[in-house]
Image (tube, rainbow, N blue to C red; front, side, top):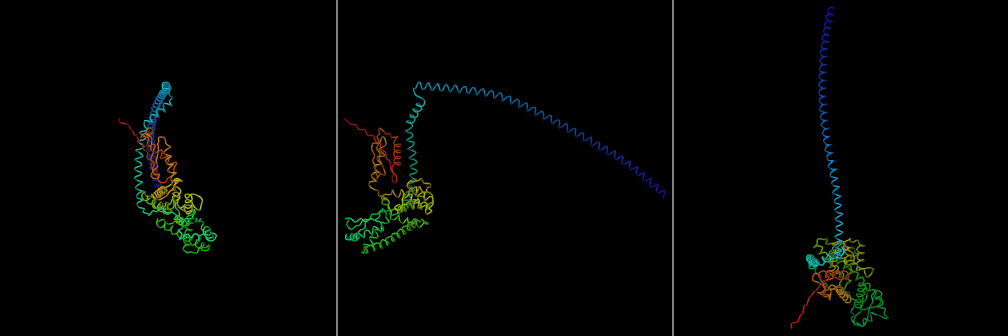
Length: 485
């Protein structure tokens, strides 16, 4: 046992010695490897340092080169700036010298010509204006003719097409104001005992009865055509009935009033149906019916409104506008005439108020306000309604004028033409739709005639109210006469 223990110790010591020897060898190897790694790292670090130093040196060299270049550029700019300032000074001096020379030249010219600059300029402008006046007149005439021809052609196409498409029996109507009697004895019965019958009729209808020497006729006088119609129907019914006394008169007046109201409603409905305008307020329909008994210069206003409705709608269709709106505005454009006997204000103001009250659109209201030029039109519908109104009113036989008003308008037209220098005489013809103006050939040249016509037209437009249009025809004639001996 002891030997075995010693042997084991000996082996153990041997193993320990070998292990120590192996550890020493491994330690030396590791130290060598570490030294080699450190050496390699040192070498790489030295290499990187050298490269960085080289890059820094190259960058420093580039910066120094750029600084030198900038210094050279700054120096060059300073030199250019100095040269520019010198040139500016030379230019300013030259300008000052030129200004002095210009003033001296103007002074010499004024001294030689005895004219100031302003006088000379005005003289040159006057000469140029006179020299080119003929060219301006010729050019204006050509432009006007071209524009007028094109506008007239298009307008005629639209208007003629609309008028041809609208066919209507057009008869000028006047409200009846004379009632025929079967005999003169009926006058006494209408007057009644101590005038009680005539007083009852006048009180109940608001109409004045004029019974004079006119055979077999009674004249009705009233500013209101509705009242006049009620009185006419009442008297006719009393004549047929034969019983004329206050109680019967009152009964007949009531029947006549209901008959007229019924007729008014029927006429309003008929106007709506004939024109195809639906959705009107019932009160507006009644006002339309009242126009049946309203005339303007002998023209029935309801028939006129229906015609304006159709014409405006047809022209709107030709132009691609709102046909329904144009027809509605045309039908209602004179609606104020149904109330102008009962309310204060013009038919335009009353018509606009009525349309506004019953919720008509802004285009309709503006068409009513602008169809006589009282306000500016705000839409093409308003323009079409004004044109259709003028066409309807200007048709031959559509309206009749008071003789005195007609004569005054003709005289005013001739006075306007005669007020221009160079006009010898003038004649209004074609019922005042054309005026022929004779000018003196010594005072008015051919190239001035177009300008003279334009001036006369402008003054007529400003000072005279007239339906449709007036043609201004200027005539210039030279006559030479000699005798053969």
